[in-house]
Image 1 (cartoon, rainbow, N blue to C red):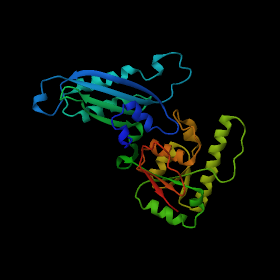
Image 2: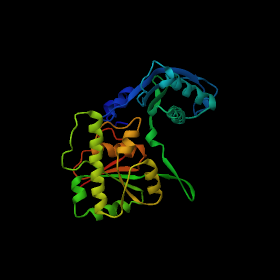
Image 3: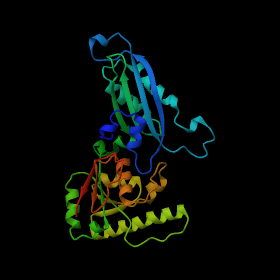
Image 4: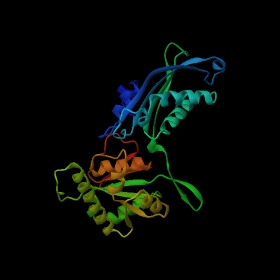
Length: 303
């Protein structure tokens, strides 16, 4: 969420817009939905129904084309009200925080839902409205992989290396530091300095731009034998389980993604990967601008 005080009491729609990235998603919203419920931690609240007001914004994947004016192809507004009713019917709760987290979890169970902004307010506890606001993202659901000991949760460290970092004489020492974090390390790069050819056709130029980044990934891998170039999610999962230091070749994941990034900037792609894998953090090595709207911690590392 934005920490700007001017946004503190804004509607969740404004909060969603303020924290959107360079390629914002579509959004649906539920405004001023009021229901009655028995909720609260204080004894005087027990057995007494009080009004709750819900405001919800959900960032969604693009609807499949053609839409054909078919409600089954979109995330219906009913899914939002049903999530509220379902959690209120499940059990009596003490905290709005618990209710908010459970409603958000229900909404994110829908395949189209990517991020939820949710505000709940008690309207009958005083002269004003008392409430809580949360943000939950599909990216916050941990990546789970199986190893010999059962299910393990992995939160990798994603590091973007600028061209200057790739060619720097201290590259091996830099990789040593990343490896010492104890986290699975995924390295990402941008395009090389040489200009890529242009075809004049957007889909073709997109593939060319991604292939240029992959050429740079192989350049990095050639500089340190620990680096293994990987492309698919299966390869990423396997390599992280086995402690390999990865260099991401982005074409497959980006082109296969329903809600994939439309930009080809290396740092922006690194952020998308970090959010997709629920990374512990994203590190940007070199003179790189931090992408706007990050939903994972970002650390700048100078050369």
